[in-house]
Image (cartoon, rainbow, N blue to C red; front, top):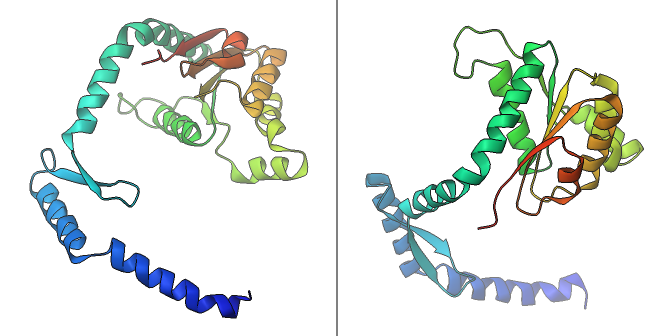
Amino acid sequence: MTSRCRAPVWARGGQTRVAAEFTWHRVADGREAAFRELSDPMSAPVLVPACRTGVSRVPASAGFDELSRLLELGRDALAPATARMAGEVADVLAGGGKLFVRGNGGSAAYAQHMVAELVGRFLIPGRRGLPAIALCACAATLTARSNDIGYEDALARDVLALGRSEDVILTFSMSGATANQLAAFYAAESVGLRRLALLAATAGRCARSASGRSSCPRI
């Protein structure tokens, strides 16, 4: 069937879906929830789509309660290792070395945020900027290497070009097993960098290559 022949079928399907999904009751419920959240964001319900079958209501404060619970569960497991790694980073920076931070996806955003705080004014207004580099931040370098050679080698190339034995590299990773992160760790090891990792419960091969790590407990 050609696209022109399908057009009426698609049109009827779209009309049916709009009629089912965008009823006056749902529109009214959405507006009510929005106004209630604006007036009292901690207690107002948030509308969450439930796979076309309806709308469930979840208190906005539930997310904060869950975060508090997770932080409490993870504190004993994460705090000692994280403090040790922070001490290693501080030693490297105090000795004139650099910090490289890396990650993929959301972890790349964490890496860039951390670097922004260190180069910026985090906690101590007026202090000097600290030498930190997010390996995922330069789109031109990253995409050029990925396009010409492959993404697996993209981060490692930066480590080999910029890393020195007095530096340290920190990775954020959920799996601890992505090929490009492992390649960067192996490159860092060949140059002599300290290798640190903040990982999820399934630590993966990054954990075995790291000189220090903190793995979130399985909860």
